[in-house]
Image (cartoon, rainbow, N blue to C red):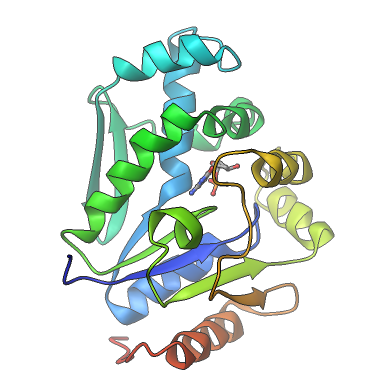
Length: 219
Ligand code: DC
């Protein structure tokens, strides 16, 4: 058993998960793992290599040949495939449109969940995604499900200049058979629609304290 602990943050697209996870990592001195970036990186590689992301057997075959390396830089997770880190390319429109389909494929999930769990062998973590509290770390007592009104979420994407149909992605992510997005057992729901970053972080810290986490803020 690991001596490290994980805070699981799940929720739909643009709910504020990443912002919250980053702030918690900074203030509590944890490593922040963006699990969505891993699904995006696999999708990026498939598109890069001309593999049809909707052809499950082609995806599974391509996945077997991918060397996926996950690391940490400045307390934030990194991912590279076959030695290349796609960086900002992961936020492109084509990837936004295809990533939910790719992440519904069980073989993709198996491989990435294994890599996600490896982080806990080395670090205390805050990990954000869709199935962190349900599948990746179901035994952690520290779970928050972050939500926000759909119009607020769509607006957040527009505000950063991203083309992303959050409602389509949410539908696929919630309706898939393997590890669908849902509120994990024991998770507390935090609606960020009317929160500022600061008030959202304070609310999250209160939730984590109520779940038994001893918190000494480092900044
Ligand atoms: O967090 P994000 O929007 O960058 O995630 C991109 C996609 O990856 C999301 O639409 C579904 C998938 N994903 C997943 O299936 N499981 C996770 N733990 C994280 C992301």
